[in-house]
Length: 233
Image (cartoon, rainbow, N blue to C red):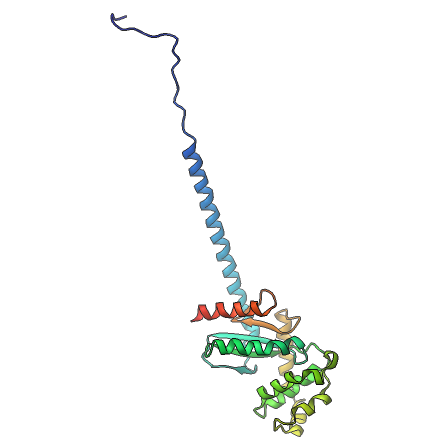
């Protein structure tokens, strides 16, 4: 042992303890990153599924025979399945017109038929026959406005409807001939088949650019329309 060098005995040597905090922070950051990526992937898959469903729906929605209202170049299409004897259809019709006024030149409305109430298929026939006289929309408005008079207990009574259409200048004899033509038979059959394919079980039912309402209600319809307008314009 070299002289002048003293060694202290009995003093324990402290070992360095690795810090766990940085490891915890890194793990937490990785977990957060995995969560964020998973959420984004889920939302992306959900959007893709929604877009695919909307595209598939268009097969059953885009029918040339459907009555339509609004500019041909409108980028937002509302398709409504309607039963003329349906009280809710009657109450919703002004709301749809208000949405169109609020988004002027951006929305086009297509009407399809789902005559679920007893006798309402004959009212549809009258509407389509009036269309041949270029009086579809005014006839529809008169039909809806007077619905309580000709559809007691939600059952359509055609004989009670005729007097409600007297001031529209319709040729009733022609309507009674036209309403049972094979052409109108095909329109009703196609609309009923498409309604079934789209799982339409009640009226009114709405699709906006192919997307159905997530749940029924005016606010839900307005949001779907607002989202479609914002995306398209």
